[in-house]
Amino acid sequence: MLPIPANELNGSGALGPYWTFYHAVVAEQLRRWLPDRPCLLLDLSGGRGHWPVQAAKAGHHVIEVVDFRRPLDPSQRDIPDHIRRVRADDLSFLPDASVDAVVAEERVLSLELMAESTVQDVVRVLKPGGRVLASVDSLVLGMAIMAEQNYWAHLCQTSEVMLVPWPDGSITRCFTSTQLRELLTDAGLEVEWVRPRTVLSPSTVDHVLAADAKALAWLVRTELEAHPDDDDTVGIHLVASARRPG
Image (cartoon, rainbow, N blue to C red; front, side):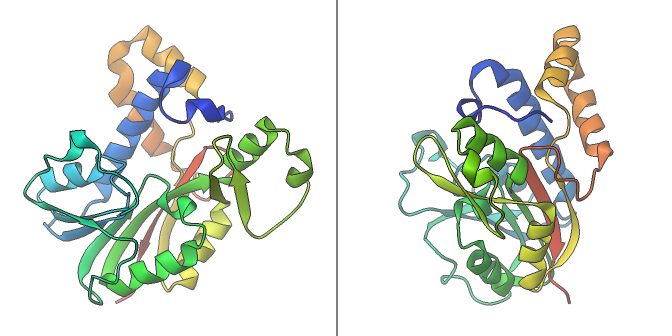
């Protein structure tokens, strides 16, 4: 997929139709990933996504961790009964092996520069046999952001950890598929798969939806059936599923 300009990554602008497709892919991927039986789900997406509501509507009980430094979105104050919202900067409020599944969407592991510590805490609270679904910024995105800002010298340097300065002054951590696997396995998880979140380009999505506005469901199925595991040469984000042994 072609790199996306930094100012388009907030879901607005000319790529609006693409983001409609992108979020539909995420929702369907989560639907397929969620356990069949009702469970206790820990959401680490920081209140930035709709995934807790989706999980609650599917019958799961959700603990949603919201960054204590971020104000709550007024539009999200009315939440379903199955969701318990907690403002915290770590998981010390949870006992060991207390949750069935963990969702770390909205690039949360890229926003936490010391992602190793976060994943270790996730493993601690996860029950044996429990699963983790996580998304991160890809190396493709990091290189595009740096090139957009003319950081050519930085692109020539090799490093195990790629920290990317954004135009707004923030810094995120970008991963290759190998680095994401290592992050999870070093914490004691068994990786089930790692893949790009999307491989269809914005131009392809726009072309198909312009020809048939009802083709969104077909595009989502096409995307999820592509399964380009471990391919980090496309896609702005990577997504992984892993399991705690036991």
